[in-house]
Image: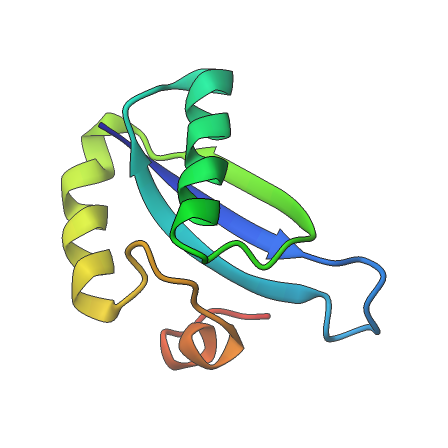
Length: 92
C-alpha cells in the first residue's frame, strides 16, 4: 500500500479562501497510476471537494509513523480543513 497526501484548492475563490482541505489516502499503486487511484479513492470516500490537487507520495521510510499519527489526529482518509490545520500548527 502507498500513502498519499492530497491537498485541494480553488484559485478562483477569494484570497484566503482558496484552500479547500486535505487528506491522506492509501492505495495499491505508485507513481501516476497510484496518484490516479488516490484521487479516485478520495472521490469514492466523498472527501474530494474539487478544485486543483497538489499531492505527494510519502516515502516508505515514514509511512508507518505518518499513518499512526494521521489515524490518531483524524486526518487519515477524512477531509480536514482550516480548523484542523490551525489546531495542528499548520500555517495557512
